[in-house]
Length: 336
Image (cartoon, rainbow, N blue to C red):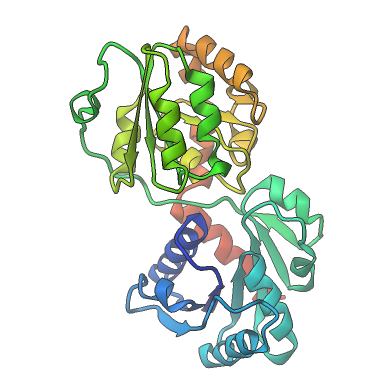
């Protein structure tokens, strides 16, 4: 098939990661792939993917943006045009009567406005929670997939000056309010453990002040951005997810593929695949603390509670599974 992806965001996060990896995977599967996106994103794609630059900073209602997108849809000669997230979906809707390709839109995060997805030929949600929010007949859930993580041995205690006699956990993500790292620090204060917070962002100064005020029993380090996140996760005893909201937690799926124990707040996709014992209410630091203490007292039970989710991840959250399910959606549209 000839597939055109549309991405109208700027910056670098889970959405950009998804579109990049999906485009590469579709290309490797033998499909012709083009991407309409901001030049900064297009520069991260391999040469075999056709690239069409637009100014993604323009408003979704700006005629210059959607006319540029329409022009490149025609240039791509696509069988399928796939809009990623709300802005791209809104712009694709403005173009849908002026080309013959089948249209798909993917919802990546909880949004207050999702009516544009119902106007396309097909809607995809990256979790069952988001599919329920769409509440339309033409919506399916396809979990985000990731490549099999590669890891190398790391000595966390030497590299970060941690106490080797304590259990070590990690939390991963951009240092922003949404990820709830401030809540996590409050929940673990006083517990005998090590914590690595892996990521970078505007909340670093605030989090550093919290860390300096922690009890002597609790050891925490901000690692900053790390290209070896999988290796760090693999070296830890567990992964803690404290998010206030998520559309799909890549951290959860990566931890599952690495077979690492997880404790998470009630956010997708953790709340769809993990045992209920491993899910705590959002922003309830007392509940998070108590559940973590209970799991620390019985690590074997914690690992046992993970087994069903780990098995599901290996069949539904790999790059191969995501690509296969997405291609199936495309093929059904073309056949119909």
